[in-house]
Image (tube, rainbow, N blue to C red; front, side, top):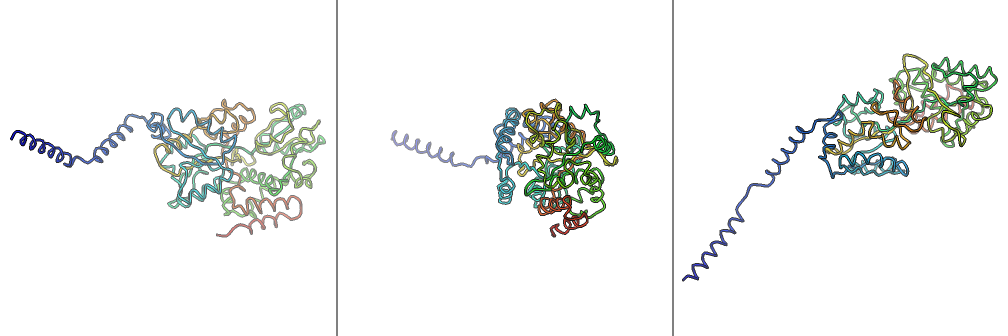
Length: 464
């Protein structure tokens, strides 16, 4: 009887435990929701926002430690290493791992990834045209809701914001922020000989033409010019056209010209050409004369500037041209450069160039933090110090530049009243890298007149 009672008691005890185990409990999701909601409230209240946005402040507070942000772009080899190294300080400060993947076939590969729904979190575009195509498809996050607009206006001149604004399905949006820049509106000269001759740096276009005539009167040719570049022959002339367009008409007209809304055969383009041909088509001003321009390799064009004495004295080109200078020539000693002067004062001091624009494709807090960081000069500081980058950010410092040439280019860009991309890079490929190059070459060589050249380019514009 005692054993039976114990047995029954044990069975009842076990049954009670089983029933208790099977009894319903408070749903776990409700608990998690409370925790998540409390965390969000605490996050906003306890971390003061930075000018760029709340998420960047949260990142520096360690709230996204252990997260990963994927990136893609054209940086490869040494550039990829410099980019990765420039991100180390931010990664260590925030715990965010920025995983960058570069490709030499970037334009093709990124289109496949984005169209296939496999977009990286952030993409670096070396030219804004391809980004504009993706913006129009609604594939890009509008940064107006990600980065504080007051900060953007503070840290970029308006031109950078204008170039970053593109048309999406719902209208204009901020498609990206600019990370790097380079300038083309530069005129190089042989410094020691230039100073010894008593020549002075021109501040206006009239002064530039006076200098050109003075050098001719002294028995020399002022300009070193060449435009031969294999299949790309002609781009050196198009750069001149773009630089002068910025100095003789409005930014609105320049943008319309890029978009095909202002014809090549327009008074504005013809006016710009008149300033160029006054130099290019005068054999007293150009080394080798007009006939030599279309057959002289662009990289060889500045070489006579280093003859003793110089055979030509002035060469307009981007900052990359120094890699074609004779070995051993020292910046600030053997050569220097000045800003290509303005023409019409109402258009200020524009700069022609290029740059990298970073766009956001996936919206997560850690991605927002990184894109906010890219809107600061600090994001490119490490690359500047390593060499090979110029910052468009107003909060960057010229003290970061170790190379005097790059520092001076950076100063010109930061002091510019406006900035625009190379027009031929933005136009449809059939025009910008096709007929614009070709017919400007034909025009310079004398095989076609101006009217016919401009009309041929207009006729080649793709129809919608």
